[in-house]
Length: 165
Length: 165
DNA sequence: GGTTGACTTGTTATTCTGTAACATGGGAAG
DNA sequence: CTTCCCATGTTACAGAATAACAAGTCAACC
Ligand SMILES: [Zn+2]
Ligand SMILES: [Zn+2]
Ligand SMILES: [Zn+2]
Ligand SMILES: [Zn+2]
Image 1 (cartoon, each protein chain N blue to C red):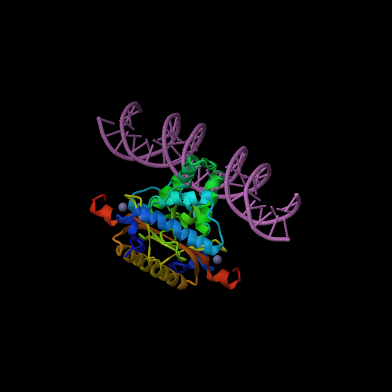
Image 2 (cartoon, rainbow over the protein chains, first blue to last red; image 1 turned 60 degrees about the vertical axis):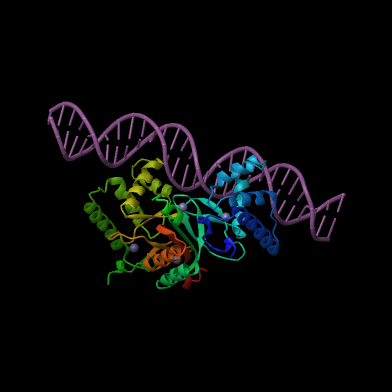
């Protein structure tokens, strides 16, 4: 079983170089299917997000891009991030005003995020059951859910064991 | 049955003056229990949030406070809002960078929000089942949820019937 | 009464986050 | 070769939030 298949592998030690490479490959495959282009800025932005399983602020990414010779004005990074988000290669985390690479861009999905407040890693997990419950609760009040933000903050197993309460 | 007991009454026509008054009463009762004070700015801030079942940006509230003779600098409103949030009288909506009065401050609760994208009204709904699911999904990955943001955007019944798709 | 100390309100200034509007340049289509 | 779309870049601004300090209120205490 490849480590990439566990949706919460973000919290466990794993061959992250492979993880990162797979992220880029899947991104290219997906964009090819969609007829969109992974241009240099976009590619670099995705690489930066893929470096760790954590969320990064736009300006943090922007600094990195500037180091690599790209423009150093906010629109540069916001446009790249918007592109990645819209094409399912990255997600925005509302609680953190930050962005994270998608953990499994292979297929369409509306994720649920688990954010460890100790190590700052971010994982995506099984969303369907939670969203179902939410839709059901909303239906009871005649409300139709179109999109939902579901972000949990807490402690990952590794940090809990390490006693970083 | 008092209208205030339906957690999603925000979307239905109701005696809102009573609704508002009840909000203030419950707030005072709650603060008395906690030994905290509802000072003029705080009270006025809560009143403003209670005027409608929608979320307001901090600066929108600030303008209203300034009209009433309170300070017109950001810290004034942010402090009042922080106080209200911490004492369970208001909630912050991450998706909107905005705040809303709590719909039922009588008891402790971690709400789930329903945000109508057409009329902008915000309702709180039954949270427990959704949170249970979320905790369960997280547990499967050895993650302990401490707090969670759950915010749904969609259409309320009234707006759906009115065809405001 | 006077003094201390916690708390609240107020101000100035700054930081962080995000967007509008416009200029340029490189292809692909014609 | 020209046209047009799109991506990148810029300047300038808007919106959200906080840091740091000044001053007033009020009850507790001496
Ligand atoms: Zn990895
Ligand atoms: Zn952790
Ligand atoms: Zn009401
Ligand atoms: Zn509505």
